[in-house]
Structure formats: C-alpha cells, structure tokens
Length: 247
Image (cartoon, rainbow, N blue to C red; front, side):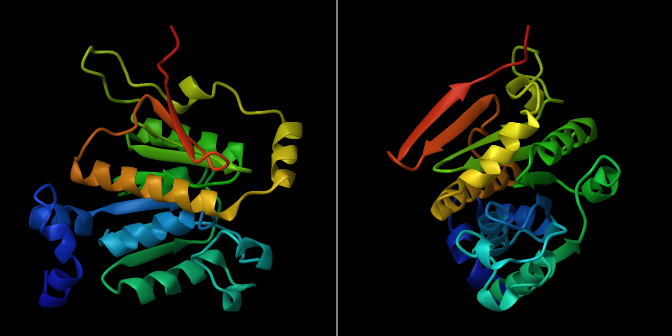
C-alpha cells in the first residue's frame, strides 16, 4: 500500500483483527454483487470504501426516478443510465483504488459460470426469486460463499450460505433450498412487487450484507450460516431463526 492508501484505511489497519494483512486480503478480493439497486447500493458503497479490490457488478436495468428513494448509489442525473455505468462512476468517486467490473446482463444459468469466474464471495441483492435461486444453485456448484438477502415492505432478512462445507459434526451446512425449498407462486411475487418498500430497510439489510462479506474475506467472527437474521423496521426489531438441511 502506498502512503495515500495507508491513510485511507488507517482505521482498519489499527484494528488488531484486521491490520495490514487483513487490508491486503480485502485489496486482493473479488466480490460479485448481483444487482445494483436497493440492496446492491450499500453493499457496493461499503465494500468499495473498505478497499475490496475488485467489485464485479451484474445488472441489466436502467436507473428510474422511482429507484432513487432507496437506491442511494445513483443520483437524479443518472436517471435513464445503465445502473452498472452509474455504479462504476460512483465507485470511482468514492475510491479510485477499487476496480469495478460492470456486467450489463442478467444472472442466469447460462451466464453463471462466466460471472462467478475468479470471485471469492457473492452478495445477492436481486429482486426476484428466479435470480435468487439461480445464484444460490450456481454458488453451491462452484463452492463460492454466498450472502443472500431480500427486502419487502418494512421487512428484510440476510443469511450466509456455504452448503459445500461441513459443520464441526461432519454434516453439510444448509443450502438456500433448505431454507426456501420452492419459489413462491407467480401471483405472490406480483403482489410483493406492488406493496412497496421503506427505503431505509434496503440500507439496513444491505449494510448487514456488506458486513457478512467483509467477515468472510477477513475470516472474522461467526458468519450467518444456518441462521436467518430478520429485521422489522416498524418495531426496530431483529430476530434470528436457525435452519438446517432437511432430514
């Protein structure tokens, strides 16, 4: 690290659990962020600020005025632009030492292998069940840790998935399908899209996602494996539930 980087990351480096070696791990890491919207915005901002060296961001959408109430990565002037282009500019302003790899496409079974190539961790902030299942299945096959989150209305949740690894007792950690065996009916998905979202909820859950990603890169603490962390903004209440592989 040069002098400017040492000053930029000084508050990380003085942490005994991070230090110079930990900051080096962050700088060498590549994280795939699925979605540059409500959840992706705080994930991208905090990972870039932390000095994660490469952020690969996949999103094929454009910035709409109705996004700005919660998608704080983008500004009014970005309306009509591709979200990945807006995200790249935002990261360049925030931290010139971070490389953003824009991927103007959807995450599907067909694109999964190329998008995951070389990535150390995945943060899924997509807004539809089909993509969430595709991301989870692909990460499980590739043996890449996944931090998955979702929000709706006043609620959100986050969990970390490493279903290819074994617990201390020798059993495998649960997968996304252990938690959500089947996608919701299309009618329910459509209904959720109309219910709205309190913008700040995406910031709270997305920041928790970023925290999980940093923990995984640094090898700190206890990841939310087998644990679903839920938040209710109406009562400012956090709850957790444990889950395991069926059978």
